[in-house]
Length: 349
Image (cartoon, rainbow, N blue to C red; front, side, top):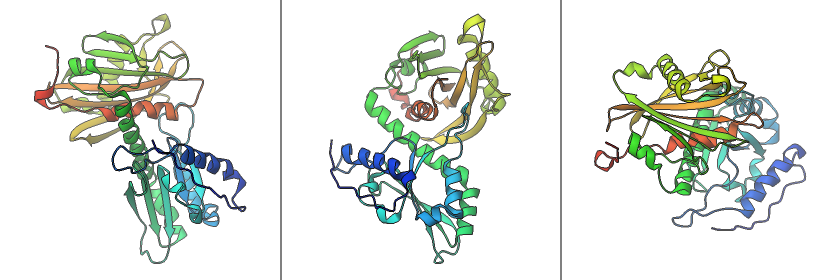
C-alpha cells in the first residue's frame, strides 16, 4: 500500500458548484492511493462510476459541454427510478496535475481546426493501473456536440463495461476462490461478493442472497440442455426466466417472481466474452401479488464442456436507497465468470 501526499491548490476562480466534489476527489487520491502488485505502478483512484472531464469552463457551459454532460448524465438503464450513469466532475485542463491524473475515468475533449472530422481514441493505464482515458477530438463545437450525441450509447457503454471489468477483477482478488458449488453443479468458475451466503438449492438451480434488510443482493444460477440457438432470443429468455424463477422464488401470499414487461420492456443484447457467446437481458422484476420489485441483469451462455445452457442472474431489492452502485457492484459478478478447460472441470456425476 502506498500513501501519496501532494499539495492540492484549487484556484480562486474555480466554480463553487464543483468545489466540494473536487476536494472530495483530491482527498480520496491523496489519502488512499494504492499500488498495483507489480512494479509499483499506482492504481487508479476515485469512487465507482465517477467521471472526470477536462474542459475549460466556457466550453463546459456552452454547446459542447452541455452535449457531453447530457450523455454522461443520462439515466442508467433498467432502474426503477432515474439515476445518472456517472457522477461528473469537470475541471480546467490546467488543473489536471499529478493528483487528478490518478482518476479512474477521464474524458479529454479537444476541439481544434487541426482535426478534419470527429473521432475518439482511448488510453488504458496511461497514468495509473485500471485507468481509462477517452480522448474526443472534433474540428468545431457543433461537430463535437453532434458526435457525442450520436455516439452517446457507445461512450456510456464503454465506460460502464470498464467499470464492471475493473470491479470484477477486484472481486476476484477480494474473494480469492471461485464458488465451489458452481464448479460442481454447473461446471463454471464464478466469484460471489462476500456476505451472499444464504443458499437455496434445487436440481440444476442455485440461489444465494445476503438477505439484507437494506440493500438486498441475490444471485441465481440455473441450467438446462442446449437444443436450439433460438433459446437465446429475447422472448425465449424472458419466458424461461419467468418459468424457472416463478417456480423457485416465492413471496408472500404465494406470489411468484416475474419480469415486469409492462413497466419496462427488458433490454436485450449479445456479446462475446472470453471467446464465449452470451445473451444479456436487463430489466425489472416484480412479485406477482407483492409490492416488491427491482432491477436485474441476466447472462445466458452454453457450457461447451457439458452441453448445457447456463443462466446467471443478479438482482437487487432496495426500495430505500439508490441502486446504481449497488446493482453495478453486483453485476460485476457476471464479469468473473469463466469456463475451465475440459480437463480441469469439476462437475458432479
